[in-house]
Image (cartoon, rainbow, N blue to C red; front, side, top):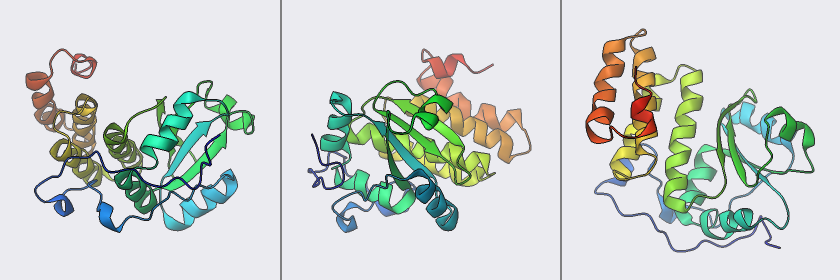
Length: 217
């Protein structure tokens, strides 16, 4: 099986952007360490999350899991992903069968499952199965934005989601990002439907047939 804590990075698959340092969520990969230093103890991870005021990236895995191995070999070894995780999250791996209490509480029965929890331990975002590096970076932006919104960090959430669009304008996760950007704008401006609709107008015009556009009332 893969040694989950010592995988070397593969060449980046993320396209260059004109000025990545200016865009929220765009990692500065050349300075990234060469591995993600996973924790395997949930109380330790939550203590660090509270102390460092960071969300927790949780990878629920099991042995003999093809998707889990692909995440390790292709995604968690990517330099951009390594940098994003190390600079913004507390990384935690949990064995599906080793932490049954967590799996039952969050109804995790498939591996891999990625969850992102805030520093209080509440899970704010869940994504099942494998994603390649580019889409995984987009997922991290959406997940962190969801955490920020629960702590009233609406402006920061909007900046992350806008950064996703700048970095990955054709991302398969773009409709979801625009949708949540509208939600963040709604709460930022005192429950303003005008602000939400201003963001959602892009979703309705560019991607009207997606499930996220259909959710707009």
